[in-house]
Length: 456
Image (cartoon, rainbow, N blue to C red):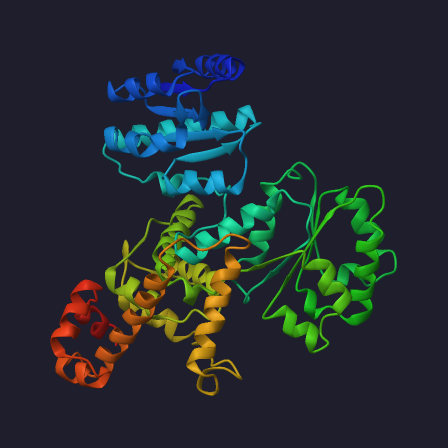
């Protein structure tokens, strides 16, 4: 390695170990226990990479990231923290840290990441631009910055270091198993095994005993619990009730409303109540449209790291991605990106190429029992209840009334404008409001009339 590394940590042992290891690897090192000193070095132009702890005597390392980005754009910052919760990782990602490692970290692993960060800085300095996000390792597999995903992260962080069983529901392809894995990997059980099982693993009488012997107090994830037959569900109940000497944590995934599956007899009541100590609902991709661009870029970067050609999505391609219903959710999006990377003939993936790929894939089918037969008030109530549930025992942020009205008003006006072909006079008449009022709302709500019409 070749470069200068700035190390900020209040633990003298960690500073010494990192200084010795980085020096032996060929780096110059400046180490300090003060964020004030670190920020002075950054402002003076010192350093090619920063390694910083979060909790320091004179401040919070995460709160310094925006200032570092402002003073030294492109300077990679690796965050290390003993507060190894998913929220710390999420905050590091939101602040656009280059990387995040929980303490205790593996020194060879940190050295490899530092080497990659130095290479990124060197390439950027030589004119080969590349974002830190595209180089970020896959340690935190959860990608999303929309409010619904932030609420999900908060709920996951709350249940992470409890011993409660967790029931994770969501449509196929939403990332239920990734959520389960993240809960385990950032919990106090992260050094113990994570075992994922299906009904087939438990068909034989000795199946549960084999699973418990393998997990050794770690985490057992039962995949698609409502699809397991009744006899095996009863076996799972007994396994939960008599786990042996090393009690594991139990989690399960399932599609749709698992409480409804229980009422319909597809899921045993005794099993449902044993697994639903905490319930996590993973949103469908169509419920977080603003994450689609971020996810697409994430998968494009991953494909490039795996050896594929560098590709980017053109504006027209992104418009189609955002307009599509994605019945297969994030998994379908990833597979679509992989196919486009392989078949695209140019660096920029065009709208026409996306039309060809998406034209061969299904749209979202209406859900029986919902839509035209459900009253609008019932639909709104269902979504509001879910919004509150995502916050667990915490209340949503203040200003809920205005926020909800705004979120309902924007699509109402956008859809009405589409239906009237963008004619504001007709739209105002349809809505039953004054034309000047409509114009003011379009401006205040930042509704892009032409953009919405263009997607039709």
